Length: 132
Image (cartoon, rainbow, N blue to C red; front, side, top):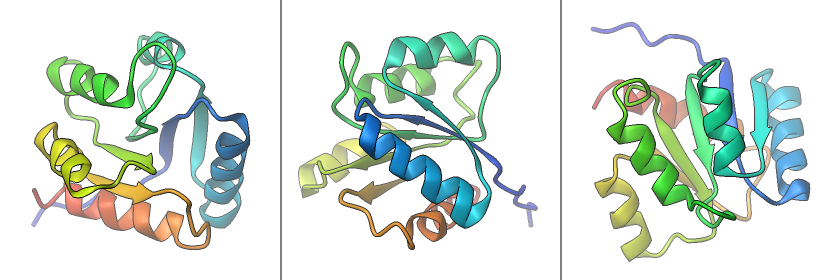
């Protein structure tokens, strides 16, 4: 059985400064994750040239490039295809969830969040991404 590494580093791509601040506080204070926030895909991809996270959390609706397009680029690039990604979005219809699964999403955390449960949900998705 493969040992699941401890999750430490998460990149969050979300253009809403208020939501970004909330998720950063929740993940760093409730579960001691190292969280880096990006307001758009361009800044996110620039940072990926320098360092990579263990997990990416994407909003679906972003300026410039959508979360879905970011996910497809991650999946299709040999340098980043190993990085699991999740969506944190209010787009959680059955059709959206099917699309997310088809592009390789490890899981979805619907907005609005219950901040006390977000770290646990992330850890469950992280662990399940190793069993796929």
